[in-house]
Image (cartoon, rainbow, N blue to C red; front, side, top):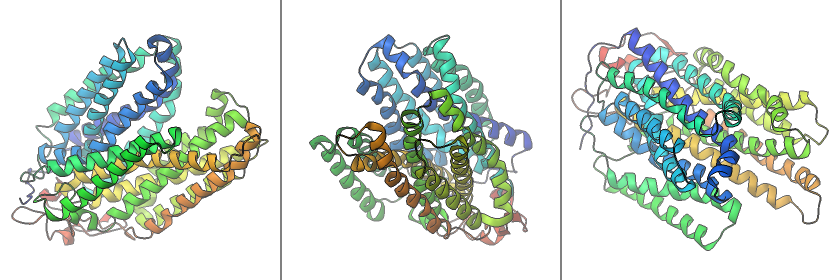
Length: 508
């Protein structure tokens, strides 16, 4: 089955772009806020609903598994049926699931509805990028992605504070009820805007349900293994799940290469210049960052002796640089190109991890602040640059799949980083040592390895475009009447500045 892009008429107007940016940024922020708030309200939830710590962990793990296993397929649905429609469905469903969690009378309901929430979260996350790709011209896409990244950083920083305020005031249920009016206020206008937004970009594309099931099973087993093994060890069940994941991944690759008439992940997409290195860069950078945050939080609270509020203040430079640095990174990206910007970000991120690895029990606030400043500055440069490359380089008819792959990388990366950090910390912890001494003995190895992981991002950054090409075609482009094939010459730019005119079809 051959994919073909549809001409959706004149370029979208400024009002539609503004609405799309507002909706996409808000949707991404709601997902980020929900994840950080849940950690804070879990103790209050347990006191009211009962349940074990393992059950509470599944409230987060079930959500993560549902999201990670469905992101790519959700992006494919957006390519076929329209990203604005998928975003509206995901946003409204996310709000409905949140209302159900707020009204739940048992921990079992919370776990089940968190999985449902993860399904709708998977629908809306790739759509936030697909919508931007659909309505913004190439030379303005970088700043739109930067704004989205800033809002995500702000939501992640505000989540623990908001969760604490709501938990001690109205109660933990208010955290989930708060999502409902936001989902309605954003989802309904997005649904109405879908009539004016660019329509289906891959009208003839098949959904490849067998491929979606195989990839979903492989990612489900991967995430389960990363979460379960550090806590419970390599038990028979965990080993079986890991083996099933390997078999599913191998079957998926074989299916996509030999049997899929319209593969879920087109091979040409991954061969498009810059996309595979950008995905690898996002994976290793998010793993390094979140593994470091996992170790660093325990270090500041259990070794240095800070309370949670003081710990949050010490790590505040991370959030500040994420929020304020994203628009600056968009400017740097335009001026210096993806390769230099991403390489600088990976280097600064690795330096931040290395600096924290040398900290001791008497570490000063300046050293901690400098380390977290470098973590935030490096990661935001990587995030803005790699996301811009993935979204911009992908053919229009595959923007949803590209967005799904990007979101998969930044969802799997943290689980991989935390699992690696947990394993490394346990390897160097000697029996019989005081907890603080054992932690300080193991921390340099764990963070040193994570710094090396961040530094490997330099290899991927070196394979990114030197300057912005912005092509909507390439090896993975569509072919046939109405496709974008052969349009590379119309999209060539230098340093992300457009020098050629872009057709109406290219705008959409």
